[in-house]
Length: 334
Ligand code: KG4
Ligand code: ZN
Image (cartoon, rainbow, N blue to C red; front, side):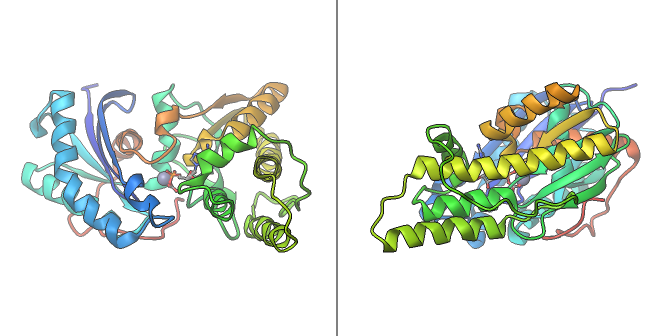
C-alpha cells in the first residue's frame, strides 16, 4: 500500500496545532501553540480571546509544521480536521484553514471528532488491538466507549453532568490553584493523605458518572471550614478528592471490561495524564490480566497528532467531507 501522509489540524479549545502523520503511526512533525498563559489570568478559557489567538497562530503553526516535516502541501494525501465538539469560534478557525487548504491544493477533507482524536493518540504508542474499551477523561468528556474494530465507537456510559477534568479545574479554583488546575491538584494529591470524608458519586451498576455533587461537596466543605476559621489542609483535600474520583472511574471501567469480556483498555484525554488514575488502573489491570495503554504524556492534552492519526483511519474507511462542512460545538461520537 502506498504511504499516506495526513495533515491534521486541531483548534477546538485553546491549543492551535498542526501535525503530519504517516500511515496513522509515524509522526513527522507536530507543532502545538498553547494559549494557557493568556487564559490563566481569567481562571479559564475565554472563547473570544481563544478564537482571536487561533487566527493569529494558525498559518505560523502550519508553516512550521511543514518545514519541520520537510514536506510541502503537494506531498500531503488528505487533511484531517477537528469539526467538533469544542468552542465554536475556535473550531471555525481551524476548519476554515483546512477547507481553504483542501480547496487550493485539491486534497480530500476528513472530518474528525475530537474524542476520536484523543482515542487515537494511543495508536502513536502501538497499534490499537480490538475489541477494546476506551476510557475518555478530559475537560469536556468522561465516557466509556466500546470499539469492536477500527473507527467504530459505541458509547457504554458517560457523565450526567460535569466532565472529570472540568471538576478538577473547579475544585482547584476553590483551593486557589491557577488554571488549568488539574495537573497541580494531581501533584498536591500525592503530597497529602485522603483524610477528608467525601461522597462517592453515582456509585451504582451503570457505566455513567456524575461529578457535580462531588464538586459541590468539596466547595461546601471549603466554605464551611473558612467560616469556622479553620485552615484547609489543601494537600489532604486534594488527596481525598482524587481518591474518590479515581476509585469510581477505576471500578466502573474494570466492570465494563469484565462484562464485555474485553482484554484491552486504552485511556484518552487530558486526565489520562493523572498520576493517581494511571497508578490505580495499572494495578487493577495487572490483577485482571488486561492490556492497558496510555497515550504519550505530551499527547494527553489537545494536539493535532491525534487528529492526523484518527484521520488516517477515517480516510481508509472512506470518510470525506465537502466544503459545506460546518463546526459543531456539541456532537456525539457514535
Ligand atoms: O483533553 P484536554 O486537553 O481538553 C479537552 O478536550 O477537554 O483536557 C484538559 C483537561 C483539563 O481539565 C485539565 O485540568 C485536565 O485535563 N488535566 C488533568 C491532568 N492533566 C490535565 N486533570 C487531572 N490530573 C492531571 N494530571
Ligand atoms: Zn481534548
